[in-house]
Every structure is written in structure tokens, then in C-alpha cells.
Image (cartoon, rainbow, N blue to C red):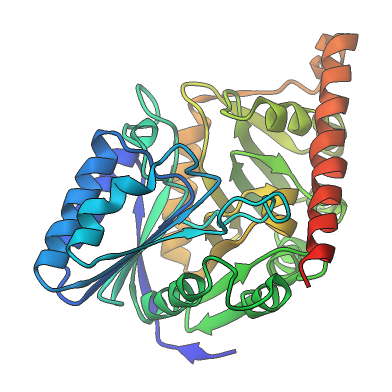
Length: 376
């Protein structure tokens, strides 16, 4: 592990705020720009970002863009012709193949000049461009300055160099990108496919074991058995666990699978809320004065299959601001009543939830594991 200096953080609470800050940073950059995302759509926002990237390249900056091939399957390669024409660089991460379709780059980050970076859940798509209450999906971002931005840039470079998987087998890629980098008030956790990579899960589990207050916002919530157990233990030892999950979701299967877990959590004393105004896409874990932010949800795909990144921040001020964000979202969420939840579920509702859980907790990891074995 490499130790680096302190980093500074600023929360970006809405899509409007995040995209405005990101575009301003692109315009102010003087040396280099690196953009990595899961979904990039060719709408008004996508065109605005592309134009800003082209202008940066025309100013002489190094400009590199990495987009997941499955997440952005509707985006044509020709969309990037204006950037390629001015000698900017573009790559698809893991071009779609039946042998390796499961392994996706779910990370989202923008790094400007290796001194400022943006991470979080925001994809480059018009659906995110709002306040998360009256319009646009509810998401969350974080602006980072300092040496952490350098390490994010290094992680991007490693991904960009092997984006097509042609240079090294996936097994080597997997080992190279499961790591923890440590700074004075932060840890950068990058993870990739495989049941046993573990760093992200182990670090999160260790913090939950010591926590008295746990506040989690997760768009897709299907934690491993070990994490479920530790969350319930917080309540058993007199602590408090609050979850804000999706009342509206872009992946109904994920929402149904999450709801299958409600009964056990409610019986253990966990408070569950569903965010109702808009589709929830945010990821935020607050464990006492420790905060996790980045691209990963608390589900099996983020913990075992996708390429993800989280930043673990140990800073009371950043944690206090995160709690303010959580409380604001709580005001727009309805609480699941433990006394009536199970009684309100019809047989068919429970059957759908069981089926969704089986698909996402059993079938999806099984298929991913089969692909992992073939890519040696």
C-alpha cells in the first residue's frame, strides 16, 4: 500500500451541480483529461460534454475517454468521430462477447490535470440532469482534490491500456485491479471480478463491525450473507441501522430481490425507507465518522463481478455533511412498517421477489463464475 498526502472533498448533491462542476473543470484544465463511465448517451448532455472535450483537445490537452461497451451499447462509435478527428483517444471497455459479457466497468470518474477528480454514481445521460426530487434521477457525486486524484488517474491509465482485454488475460487484469491505496484521510478501493478478491468487502465489513450508527443509501441492495449478518448485529448490540433503498428503480428485478430481504432486516431492528420522488441511483455508506462514496452499490454484482471503485473517507466534517444529505433524502422517503410489511405482501408478490432473488443472487454469479473459468 502506498501512503500519500491529505485529500479534500466536496459533495455534489444533484446532477445539475455535478455536471456543471465537471464541465467547468474540463474547460479550466491545462494538461490532461480522463473520462471513464458506464453509460454515455448521445443526448444534449452527451453532446455538451463531447464538445467540451474536443475544445480541450484543440487547446493541446491530452484527452482520453473510456466507456463500457455493454453499458453504452446504444452509443455508436461514430459519435466520437469529432474527438478522434482532433486526435483525442477513445476506447470501449470490454467489447461485448458471449464469453465475457458479464464483466463490466461500472466505474465513473473524471480526472483533470491529475489534481482534481469527480467520482460517484453519475453517468453521462440526461436522466441524471436534475435535482433528484422534482426531476432527474437521485444520485450523488464527490469532487476530489489532492494526491487522491493522481491515484485515480493511475487507475484509469491501467484500465485504458487494457480496455479490450487483448493485452493480458482477464485473470491477470483481475489481480492487478483489486487493491487498496492509502492516504492520510482516505483509502481508494478498486475491485474487480471474483468471489475471493475481497478487499472492498473486507474493509466495509470491518468498519460495520465497529460501528454504532450505520446509514446507507444504495440504489441496488443485495448484500452478501456476511454483510447482512454484520448489519443485523449492529442493532443487536444497541446501534442503529437505517437504509434508504429504491422506491422507484430502473432495474425492477433488483428492487424485487431487495424486497425479499426486508422481513429479516425489519425483524432485526433495521429501519428501511424507500426513496419515492424519483428513481434512486445514489450510493453512500456512512459508518459513524467513516464515509464510503463511489460507484459501488451494496449488491452482489458490485461486490463480486463488476469493476468498481469506492473511496473510504475518515473525516468528521465530510461525514457530518454526508449525514445531512442522508437526512434530506430521508424526508423524501417512506418508512417500511415492520408490523404490516409481511401481511401486505400477496403470494404472487412474494413469489416474484423469490424469483428475482434467485436470478440475481444465484444465477448471475453462477454465470459470471463460468465465464471467469474460461478466461485463463
